[in-house]
Length: 259
Image (cartoon, rainbow, N blue to C red; front, top):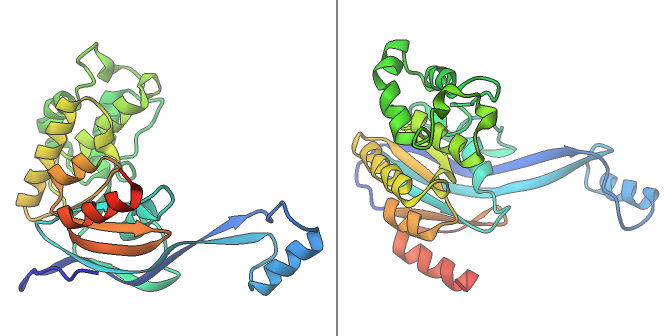
């Protein structure tokens, strides 16, 4: 794992040998009899009918203000789980995660309600992100224009259930991007929308970095990672495989995936 040269910078996130384990109700089905399945559960020291999924395995890193950090890896590698742990939504099974300031996970803090209009969701999402009602009023038009959801009609006045998944994701990003964050974590938001929206999003991420925040971006789009991030964490099977400058890590990742 590469050690980042940050001088005397103060860390925004410290993960120290972090382990995250999900407990899933329901006994395993498939091979063997019920008796053998129960025996396997007992041998693992698990409660009957509960399986454990070890999603993050001993991950350690530090992030600093002004960084944009990409998270890459195969599906199921632990990227989203790691973000949820940083946001304080998942407890550590072992190890620790520390944050300086308030972490915001896009799509959770700005949770949107399907039965309410986009307009109402901008207000509720802004409040959830810590903005005052006055700040929301001041930034409302910019949020709507940034999202682009009104380009083909007055969708902001319609219930969220009428939106496509891409429209909803763009509105969530636009709400989150309307304020500065200590730590902002974005999970695949830049995969939605056209190239124009992606460029606006990437520019906004660069602005957030300049305001002394830290941005984490999960994406399967290597170009977005290259255009946005100066550092990359590569996870596989819950383990941190590589941590370093974007170009170096993506080069090794593309060798691994053959893409």
